[in-house]
Length: 384
Image (cartoon, rainbow, N blue to C red):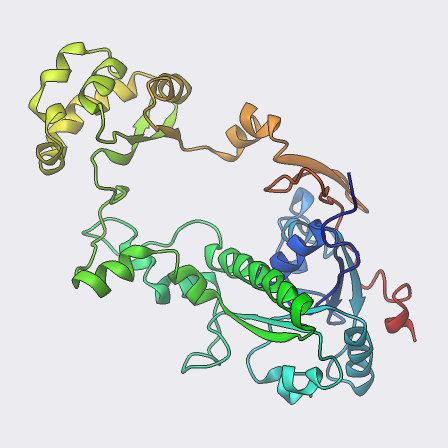
């Protein structure tokens, strides 16, 4: 094997929260040297947890550790002249800057792209914010929840006779981080050809909105609005929904090709192949409640693993709704080494999510997150 893919690349991670640090973490996993610049009190995710034993400790936050593995930590007060001077020294030797300040804040500090590009013309400067650098919402405060609402994703999630719902997790932040990562890699390729850096403006709102075709292309092309419809996915076939089974929940996706025979075999009732609701997709879609009277009792008599295995053997794409426990026990994820371990100072050996892709020639890194300011004396530019 050769060196890591991004060996020799230096990244200054000035961002906080999830989106920017996640982008920087992906670059670190690929071998880049990532120096996380934190305010004296530390990235605010250090205070969010989860914490071992539920005892708050800024060095033991699960969220911070997840987002900041393989990085170094330097603390700087950017409100001070000395702090800004140190950051400028760091940027003079850097390839990439990732920042998440409210638009205008970096200009107030004399550190926006226009201020920096004159002395660092090759710098790839990536800004990751909730709503982007321009537009009426640019100065608004936001997070993943606000982006879910403003992107329209929330509008199509939930039951038709109830209020809209949010999805679990922080999808806007992670989508924004992924878009930032890809755009940084593209900008580095452009720099390799031209020698020029550039400014990247990533909006988490737009990153999430681009992942929902229902609220964009459907309305733009047809003037149609998809309504909320329980847990049903609006795939052009029914069933395509989440149902309870004996020990949890399972996603039942019928598909169209070969549906009557495959579903009849799965339900162990061959005679159902000739049933009108099995034969006719549109009848099944319109009379879904009648169809579910056949389906639901059978599912409630079987465990998800049995249903999943038999469905997949018939090439029917069922999937179980996994809990955290079943995720950790998954044979598939174990073989793929999705979960690994890190040795986190002050905490010990911890299970951790591994890399989400594999590279045959350039290994990926997996390491602990830094203690606050641990590398301030070790990074030459910060120690001067």
